[in-house]
Image 1 (spheres, rainbow, N blue to C red):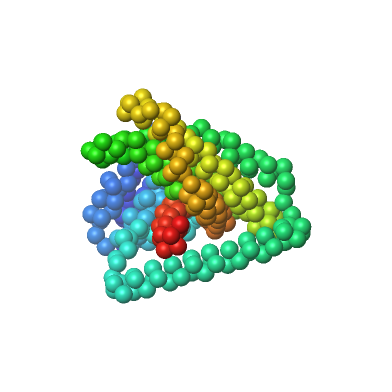
Image 2 (image 1 turned 30 degrees about the vertical axis):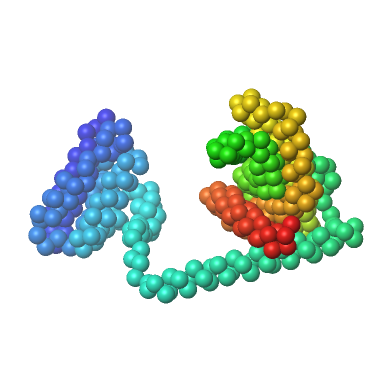
Length: 375
């Protein structure tokens, strides 16, 4: 393989000619541009750069990379490069490469005022609220069509969603609920044993689980499991333009995709809450009997007397509201997703965060209303 050679000829005033010879292949190694730039810079009064490749035997992309960086560096020093003496293939490739203008990444200087940033955040929040209200309106219209028998969605998919939202979540709900019941029992025992009233642990665990904790813990679990799944599914469909395809076919995406998911969660959340209540009471019962030495019959009687129908209905109202919140948050973020993989992850994260925040706010509101009404 002929050896690469570079000869700089500055015999013509104001012009320097770079003579290339040998085989310019990547396998043979490419000389560094910096060395050539130093020699060009040392020649005074150079305004033009030309090339002579008559002695060059063969070339590949290594030559293109060398010439590209060389020409770019010469442009920074205000030296014009002439490509006309290069091979035709090299000229075409270099012309395409040089047309791309690299934009340096510049850190954005945050020179906006505090009030401007606050106003931007308020406008973004306002736009989000309007989008949410519009989405809720579409859901209301779709439910109106559903109750009149005009909505179109697949019933087999609805049954599958029921299974995903219900039976598939039983193990996690059981684990979390039992642990919450155990925690409530230990917390109650810490204070009640000071007064010799450990038996009232049954009341603490029963009322705490049935009235709020059972529904809340099941909802948080479903928000991270099912709500995130809804957002990811719809976000990926948005990325793959499947939702646009439904619109083209005249099928409402809200009717076909959102209504089954909302119905599945609204139906299964009260059932999961009842199951979570039972598991939480069981966890408190196990700790009360095994570690605290309470009488099983007396524990059960105190649980029955404390867990009234009003407490049970309050918990079921919580679960119904939580089911709506989780489904709407997941579907709304999924339908809002942009067309990229990163946007799908962002939509999933926003669905979980907004659902959990809404669950906590809804719990506080319902608790305050029940306190005012004396329920």
